[in-house]
Image (tube, rainbow, N blue to C red; front, side, top):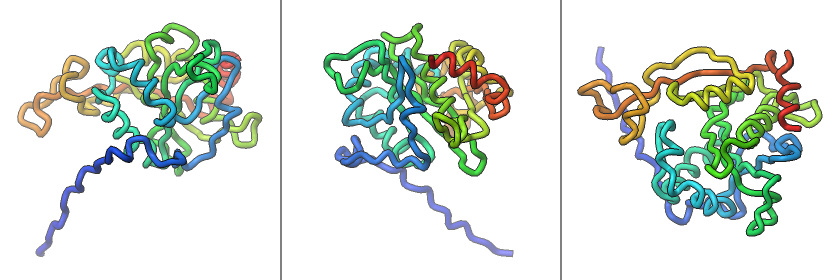
Length: 259
């Protein structure tokens, strides 16, 4: 029996400089409704990250600390254009992913009075599966000036309410069955935050994903002779908070954190 293999690797997409900030007017291109009332509490709110509005402040907060801030991620961003190109491809052009800017309402920002507070960090919904009513809270980042405050817990609480609340509830949510959390097993603060927020540890995904060059210390040694020799792989802790956890008492705990 004869056969052919006509596969050709796809060319890696390139974001032109004119596309780094996305279209104008900005299209978040998300396949689910945004419920602003669900994404806001007395002290914090989540709004879609819009590069023309938020990018410069984002970079001001991370540019001098990017190695420390991104050491547990599987890639880091060394320039604002690098981050914006990634955001355009990974988030905006994928209708099943969205990045939210976290606004701390307890700290006014005179330079951006229309924000209703200070830009404090980011939280994303990634790997969303509409067929399985599942999503993952990912690429969380709290800027240094807002760490060890209410910001981390509250932004996770608002995201959970948005994901797990039924569409018929008040305020409405997406009605998903599963919210997932993945973290480098070395990142104790991330795993600890998830567990404090009601996530349950399900196991460890070993040797996935491969880490960026320069981050070998944050994973296990890679295999000599393979395609990514010299780069380590991450062991990933997998946690989840599901609809039955939510209805079984976690909803009230989350709401208490929101205020």
